[in-house]
Picture 1 (cartoon, one colour):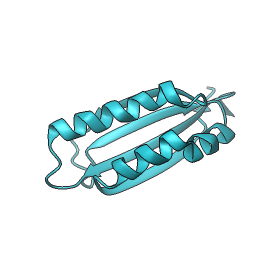
Picture 2 (cartoon, one colour):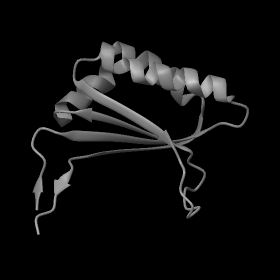
Picture 3 (cartoon, rainbow, N blue to C red):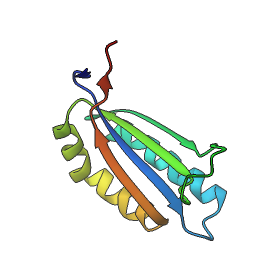
Length: 109
């Protein structure tokens, strides 16, 4: 096994507050996606809505995945003024949130 070189994933699981409309969620997602254009260390962004049939989501409905080249890149992202401004808006719309950063591990067989 080995860590993928130069890649760190930033995963955010979100449960939006009751009363937040789908239109508001769409706008929040567009704002999140736009951060990749504003913050240089953020290399990629993907998101999606839970579609699992296992019903183990614990109320979390959306997944947001950002890609960085290093943990230092994540630190720069977190402190960047565009992220700080956006995070204040985004987090105020959430009922629950989990954030995990990890380096993908390659499994050799």
